[in-house]
Length: 150
Image (cartoon, rainbow, N blue to C red; front, side):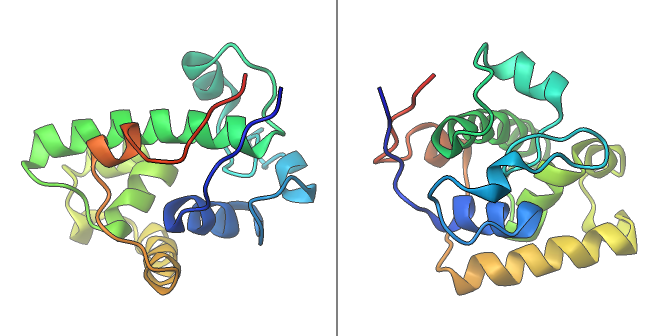
């Protein structure tokens, strides 16, 4: 049985910046394997994928988005506990793409590698252009219109 996922600025911006996906529909970006073995249009490390789902269907954009939301909910929750506030979009991208580095510098943006910060800023700009708003753990867990498929 298939599933339907509403497009969201977060989903779209992550897919665009990670694999160049221009549409929530399945396509070539869903088959991209990153230089370190990352899978799905969201470029998730296989061991992280397996920690969040038993599904092997990483080429299905709906399944990949469900897994992405779970991962981000955990990372955003950890960030919120540590800092006492929700992350800004630039920080969301660092939580996604460089979580160990970001946590290792105490979630202090000014301490993040210039290269990582520049990519995070590009994500931030794209996310804002797409109409993105605040990203919180509850918004990731309770996002309306999401139906998962395994």
